[in-house]
Amino acid sequence: MSKIKIIISGGGTGGHIFPALAIANAIEKYHNNVEFLFVGAKDRMEMQKIPAEGYKIKGLWISGLQRKFDLRNFLFPIKVLASLYKAKKIVNDFKPDLAIGTGGYASAPLIYMAAKQSIPTLIQEQNSYPGITNRILSKYVNCICVAYDRMERFFPSKKMIFSGNPIRSNILSFDKVRKESNNLFKIDNSNETVLILGGSLGAFSINNAIASNLKELKNRKVNIIWQTGSSYYEKAIMLVKDYNIKNVHVFSFIKEMDKAYSLSDIIVSRAGAMAIAELCYVSKPVILVPSPNVAENHQYKNAQSLVNKKAALIVEDLESNRKLVRVIIDLLKNKDLRYSLAKNINKLYVENAADKIASIALKLIK
Image 1 (tube, one colour):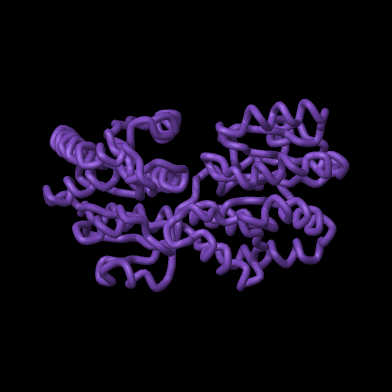
Image 2 (tube, helix red, strand yellow; image 1 turned 90 degrees about the vertical axis):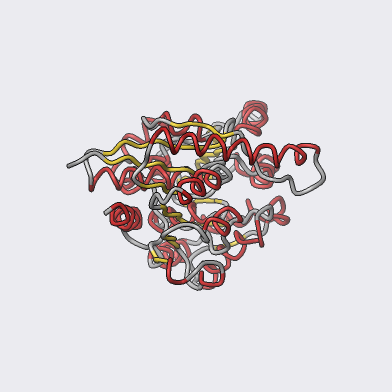
């Protein structure tokens, strides 16, 4: 096959980075001679996560506007101009056959500059309520891959293709790694396991709810795998040590999520689109704690759509300190409800999303 060159831009959170990686992996299955270049925002997590997966990445000096008054907002126009200039240089130097955006601030200047130079462009929108970056880019790109119905409210319908959300390739084999998972997490196999996730950056309300109820969890025959995010990690480690708790295992970030999923009997998670896509595939009983700090409260809407289909339980963020651990304990006791939740969430999984997007992307090149 002749060599093709593809730029993929997106980042800021795992919700933009993981689909970018999943799409790249899928494209490599269809075309064995691809050179990828990722473009992200300087000082954001993609600058570490992407090289760790073996891909090259360049960073732009870009960030979003702060919601409240902040002196950093005065730098925003300068950052936009600087990023547009660098994005144009990256496109000119790399000469891509295709540019793909998965959301996040860095994808705006890169995809815009690629589209202006008549390079085929595709964006992938994970959420039911799109971010401002993709809403702006939708006017310029060739194709928009979406994961929810009724997205014509935001995007030109003639450009849209329903693809679902791509999940990380290693998650697809999560149920085959349980033995290796035991070695990694070193938990008591005679007890059930609850996986606590607050997203790739951590979630204060979830972390605080677990921390405030550690004594209650200590007295239960249950394993807790607790991903805290970097900001809460030291505090969580100190609390577990002070209380001399053996059944709570703390991690700043869990890279091998397939192994964590394989051990889990119940999962507590935020309600981001990519998290929900993975949870639908994994098909375990889920308690969702939607983040209130997102545009148009879309995480709550995501969570409520699952609750309406009896596919998940919901604990609102403001009530998490009081209710979350109680809901976990009640669900541990209710095997019939756990079976029903797992069965219903599995029905919502959209198969082969990454492969669909890869196929669409390669057709744009042709």
